[in-house]
Image (tube, rainbow over all chains, first blue to last red):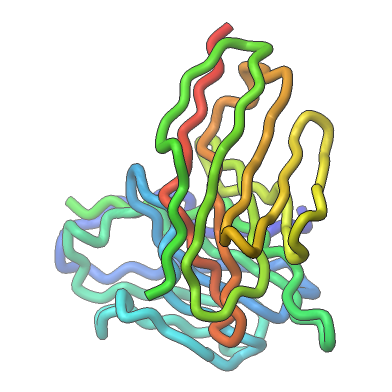
Length: 117
Length: 111
């Protein structure tokens, strides 16, 4: 499978627990994005990486959220002390930045659906 | 603040009808506009539009960008039940390199 892969697909956790999600982008893609989507809304940008550098974080990303992309390949998104409001679909996307051309289209993974009870 | 607005939010038509979905945007530094189709899972890429007035076509789907009007339309002709989905419009903002999404249009095709 050469698409964007996310694990786990579903996660149910109790309020206050920490959770970690993983994203494996398309192998030649150097840009990786995290989005959050709640029911009836379009995806909201959380953060993005170019290679291993985290270049932008949304105001939505509180200090309970942290993302890493240690070797410029896969990325993890951790949520500490989860709250019910964190329940959402967490989507990862990747794209390739081409010098002089810009960004290719972003391809999305299947998402991780988080339910905080 | 960068904003993308889609209309209508919901549309129900009969199989065989033609539909037009609208997307308008207000962003600080436009780079390109993308359309995605979302069924029960992740958004799947349809089109990326950068230049105004050039129609992109894929089978029964087509899309065009109007940079003067800050808008785009997505047309689907001879709709089929498999076209039922949420259609998302997103704008790639230059510099920030992020996609700003609209709320989506929920399209339902009845047989």
